[in-house]
Length: 97
Image (cartoon, rainbow, N blue to C red; front, side):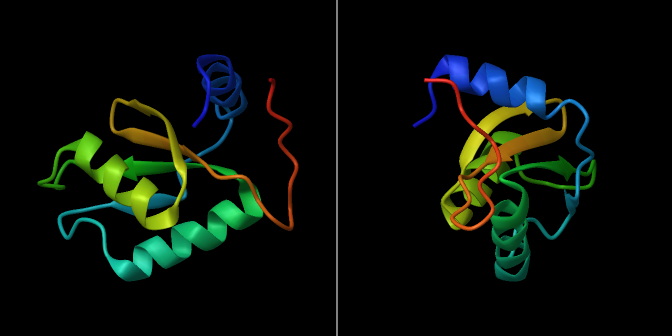
């Protein structure tokens, strides 16, 4: 689990990042989870955008993605989810204690 201090740090780190995935009317699927998992391994911190035609609640979508990719939801802000997962091979982000 991330502490509030770590979440705040990750939020500030994510400002310049553009969303690289979009969740639409079909919701979250296995293929999307696989791609997000690979992106998290490479980048550690990503944003996922939820389109207006997505029928599911944004917090439910965030929960599905985080449990499906074993990542942490840093924040759900507007229609954007910020996700973090420590990389095993490409560790670049140093979290505050």
